[in-house]
Image (cartoon, rainbow, N blue to C red; front, side, top):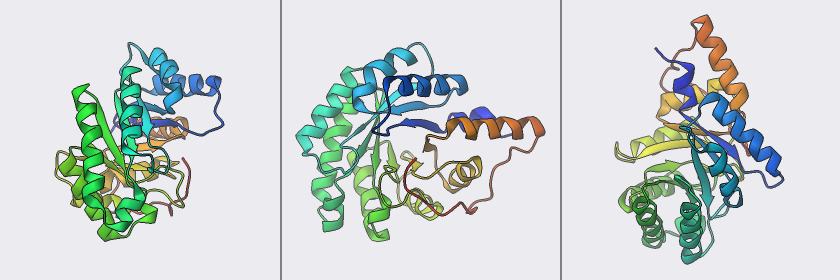
Length: 245
């Protein structure tokens, strides 16, 4: 039977907005610890604070690489990843170079993912790769799935939350169908309620990036107590995607 804890372990609590203060980051970590979510995904400069607050818990520190546009030079992304790992980060969400994908420069994109995957795995961490699906057509999304799997990514992920739109059920279904079983899928961008999380889960998402963690978990716990927390039907509809977390 589905439980609220099953939902919690799907959530990467996002604290990526540029205006957040250290107090906001602390509050985000407190929420993550309260509900026992998978990670706190914070800005690179917040990692010393996040790592310290999450120490000794099952909630992992996560940060972003090449965020949000993906257009940093590869050595800069590698340096950023190394610094994050040195800071104690256990999961990295890197942004693909979107221009390379749109131009068909797949080998170049694959080599960049492979370089960061090798460093990440050497440190025992997990790499998620963000596509920014709102800017890609289906053929480009499929190509991105293939190159990420070949390069050793652990997850493929829909969005940064800062593009023109976020995750869709259709994109999760497409991505799940075009990566091997050992590569997981993360939905992010515009996921603000439990029903959307359940729809993404039914489509094949193993994680969801959210900032509305508290509202989602309160609803999950309410439904669990009422005996109404249930899996969504495969292909269940979700609200139209919007930007932001």
